[in-house]
Length: 216
Ligand code: ADP
Ligand code: NI
Image 1: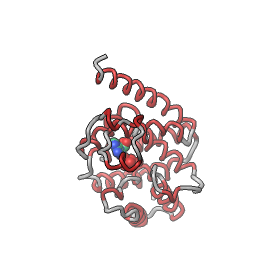
Image 2: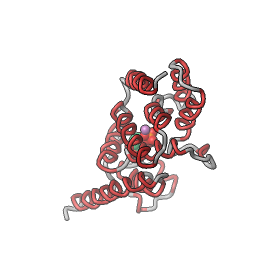
Image 3: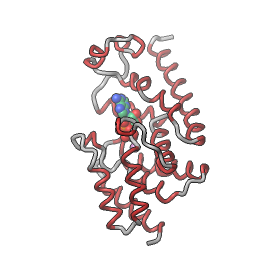
Image 4: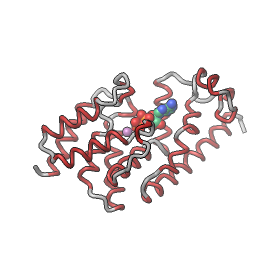
């Protein structure tokens, strides 16, 4: 079957699956990751078909919202791609992307990344950075009813690990725990270059945040 038609069917499938998704993982997140993936793949000369399918299908069933079950996403994607008549080699490549894209997941250690995974992982990480990344972080924190910031549990205070875990982690802490580390974890030269601008914007944002907090 024609690749363009498969992409279009995948778009419709994912839009339907994500109709009730929360703000951080809605269709617009997928659309941004898809667009960024195509851009990076073009610059890095990586074939785009598996990249596009991987980007579109990477978040159809986040295990955080499915009782920690990490098999639902890959299973749903495999079922859809098989039903749509996609070649087995492409299906395998897409499922590999979905399984290994996550920041967490100890099972990613030692896995040799494919070029397509490198591209989609960079695009997904870029969406956690910059102006949009900041918006997504505070949206997530609001969803969890977390404070924006709390000087008493700031990442620099070095609370004991247990003490820190018991505290409600303010959203600002997420910048130090994850977001500011992502720039050095990028896979491709293009992704790294895009990450630098977004990283600098977050640093500027944090400076301004503390400045306003302290009425400086
Ligand atoms: P992914 O898109 O790779 O699945 P996550 O599901 O971990 O990423 O996170 C989705 C979005 O929510 C990201 O923008 C991330 O920064 C944000 N987020 C995740 N955990 C937290 C947290 N503890 N505090 C604030 N934002 C968070
Ligand atoms: Ni994602």
